Amino acid sequence: MGIRQEHRARTMQTIQRATLDLIEQRGLEATTVGQIAERAGISERTFFRYCSSKEAAVLPGEQGVRDAMLAANFESGTLREVIAQLLEVCRRCFALEVEHNEFRRISRLLISEPELLSSVAQQERELVEVLRNKLESQLGMQRMQALLAAEIATCSWRVSWQSFAKLEADGSAGDPMAVFEQVVAELRAI
Image (cartoon, rainbow, N blue to C red; front, side):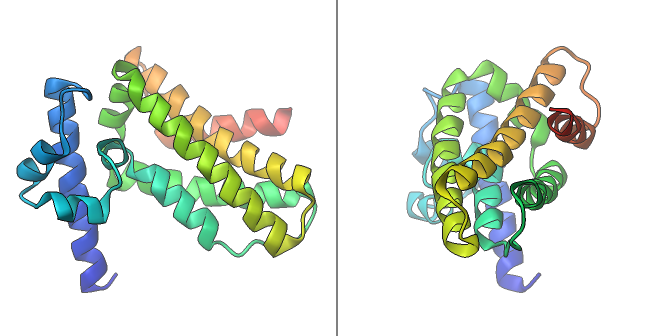
């Protein structure tokens, strides 16, 4: 990673931590971008260079998975093979999210701040649409197949997060990657 990318990653982590701290203390509704920027030691303008909203600052993995899926070069194949490729991208993104972001804190906030789920749902709808377009244009998939592949990948990401968040809330959370692998195994069983 170059100096610029390292600086960007550190700044994003600082923004995320400040956002999480404030939302845990005050709640999502009462937290402003100005407060987050002040806590992170940056301007509001800088905040918006990194994040589109306070919800996006809490959930940088959503943008990360979107970026990774759009950057991936998928090989043509059957619907099953394309889904496997998409799930591999999700797996790598999920592992990065667990390693580099405040995974457990985010999981707790997803339970305690239902408004965050609305933001996640909107981001996921957008991801499905752009991913469907990519699969159609890059692989020449039919619209329905591309939509199914995009929905399955996005659903796997969401179910992994939600399952882990529920386990975390119940006090029985273990390894988040094991949760992701269980979701993929359940999907294969279907």
